[in-house]
Image (cartoon, rainbow, N blue to C red; front, side, top):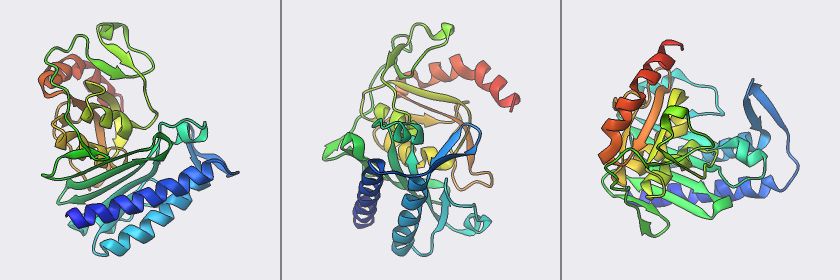
Amino acid sequence: MADLLAAVAEIAQAAGALALRRSGESYRRWEKAPGLPVSDVDLEVDAFLRERLMALAPDAGWLSEETADDPARLSRNRLWVVDPIDGTRDFLRGRPGWAVSVALVEAGRPVLGVLEAPAMAQRWHAAAGGGAWRGDTRLAAPHRITLSGARVPTDSLPREDHDLVMVAKPNSIALRMAMVAAGEADLVATLRWGFEWDIAAAALIAAEAGAAVSDALGAPLSFNTVSAQAFGVLVSSPGIHAAAVDRLSARATAARAAG
């Protein structure tokens, strides 16, 4: 696994360098659906990653934000789960809060994850059972035990969460989850359906750093599902996870019922 992780990290680094170089050039951008921006850089990085990663593990299936889903992946024990540019809005605006996200899933669980954030000069990686790292620094999630005062990467807080503390928020949900892994935030939560490619690599990194990781209702995350979606994500210091689930449960249940 160490050799495979090193190879994937090298590929992610090259993909990040490609995206960073293209960010300073002219490129096309459009909305693939209302509110969902994309650019031809996303597609170029996706094609690059698919060629290189599939060469490493030809037996694996493929799931990516920028590739049409092939149901054949469901019959594969291993699956590459990729977001070529997570945080596209920051990429398009020339902000640094985006990352190349690559995970290898086996039997429904991430076993390898890499986040390459070239505009921030940061690389995060983890292998199951091997801890989580940013560069050469081993990561440890925070040990907070009180929900009030918890640091949350966000632009605003609901009135009922006035006791939480806002910290700077990258557009990439994967990087926000990684902030908990690094002890730079205490809680990250989303209360809507999201795709596996957004969270697979970061979920492993956070868990290997000792963070508690679940969906918005506190249930374990599963990957390579039919819908390739999960209902939200909740990543936190283990000592506040139950309190966060309890606080958010009514909102999460209502949001899920609303679709």
